[in-house]
Length: 191
Image (cartoon, rainbow, N blue to C red; front, side):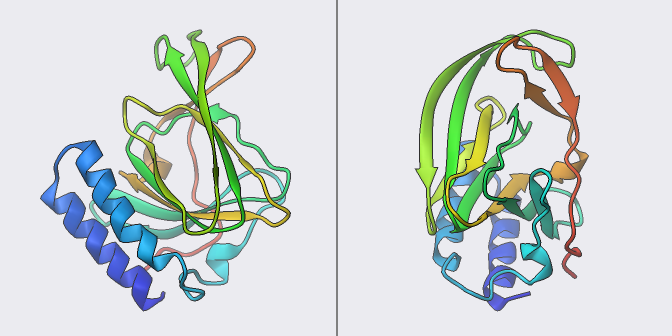
């Protein structure tokens, strides 16, 4: 693991330990993430592996108390996620490629089997070096796709161990809500 990534993990650990509102913590995480995104050694070869079927979320670090997790989120050319949420706060910094994000307002319950109304809120095109808060617990529905001729790689920082959270995806046409869990892909966890 690169020195910059180790230092960033230490910074996130301190931010989470210090606490504050989600807005305060995500702003501090975003501020700490931006300066490391130009490091060509930031991610290992394992952490840059991409699946050809579906979104890849490779482990970078899971804090032992599960208070935060960091992954390399990768979409291959032409890949798009379903509309989904996270159930926790999150910050993303684009490392390579271009990401297209569409945000939605959800009206209705966040539970499997429910029906909700989704209203488009806006779009964001993000490229290398861009950092943004992707979600807070109450503002958290989006769809993401690769918008470049190479895979888009983002550093994703989440409150909690994202793989252990029940998350929800939303069918755009019907508003149907289904639960799912995200697993961690290829890469080994940090020491």
